[in-house]
Image 1: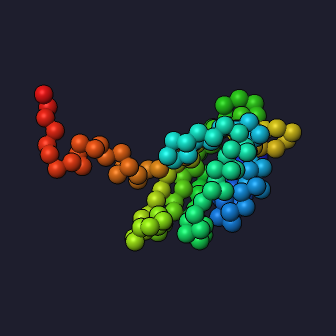
Image 2: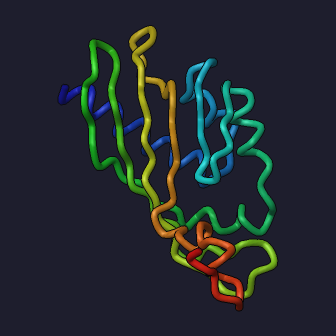
Length: 151
């Protein structure tokens, strides 16, 4: 597994490098043709092409901020011959959404299933989860001025 671990860490180093550079076509080559990718917002892309197309659609103001993004492999677990479960943690300090005035330090976990095909590790499935996006899930009732009845 040591050689596998090194190869997978190198894959995620390359993943991060290409993502920061916004070289999404080359970044897409790190995925299988039939990959599944679930974004931090719950959008589910079901092929390499959908995944790349979705990641190409990024506002210019976000592209300039990609240089602040970091990702580290924090867990590797073999599931079967040529199948590996990988967890990474990502950090994006000072992330400013389009139209926002202040930035926020975003962080999250990335879970991926990798498969070895033709001697090369590729991402077959992935899910990206924000860890500090709790305000995205604040209930409407808790944001309203009127108290909610417990009837």
